[in-house]
Each structure stands twice: as C-alpha cells, then as structure tokens.
Image 1 (tube, rainbow, N blue to C red):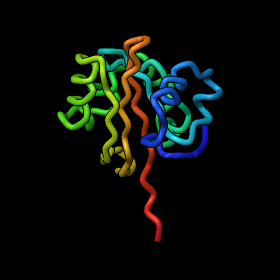
Image 2: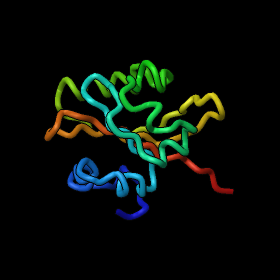
Image 3: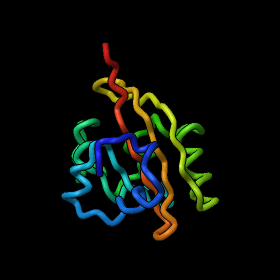
Image 4: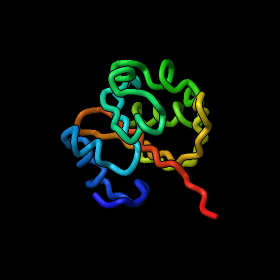
Amino acid sequence: MTNQETATLSRAELERIDHMQPRELNALPFGAIQLDAKGTILRFNDYEAKLTGRKPESVIGRNFFEEVAPCTNVREFAGKFHEGIKNKELHEVFPYLFDFKMAPRNVTVTLFYNKSNDTAWVFVREIVKTA
C-alpha cells in the first residue's frame, strides 16, 4: 500500500486492510483502528499508538467512543459511525480535531464499514501544515 490519503483508497483496498497481518497493519502510513458494531476496539496499529501515545494492549477491548477517545462521542463522529453500522454502509471522510491530552491534533478521519464481518475501521491521518 502506498503512502496516499485513505480518502483515495478504493473499497477493495480498504477491505484488504481487514485481512492484513499485524506486521502489515503496523506498517501503514496512517492510524488504523478496527471497531466492532458497538465501538469496542479490536485492532489498533502502531501508527495510531504513536499518534496518541497509547499502547495497543491498553486500548484493545475498550470502547473507543466512551473510554478511549471520548472527544469523538459526538454526532459528527460517533453519530456517523452508529448510523453507518445500523445501515450497514459507511464510507465517510472528514476533518476532525482530536483533543488529545498531550497535544490537540488536526486529522483527516475515514470511517469505513466492512460488510464481510460487521466491523468498521477508523483511519486517521494527521494533517501536517507546511510552511
């Protein structure tokens, strides 16, 4: 997978991420968080760990919206996720400000529902300002 925006990835490329081995998932040039239909974290890659300062083992099994990233428990984020799960169709890309305790970060978020296993992915790419 090339170092391109998740927004430009095809449905097939996004679905392929679901079948990646941990080494491949950790090599992605963006954050990747897999959630079950209730928002429980199933997978959390190294890029996201570096971005957030959280170890995967400390977040896997916890609810993303309520326990890990409560700043996302708003209509503009969690609402899109829940609606997509309900409709079994989700592919949204939007800018978002993650209000991390260490330092807030402007990011581009891609929410993607995978019908094959009723899970959703949250892909996060930090927006880096260039001078």
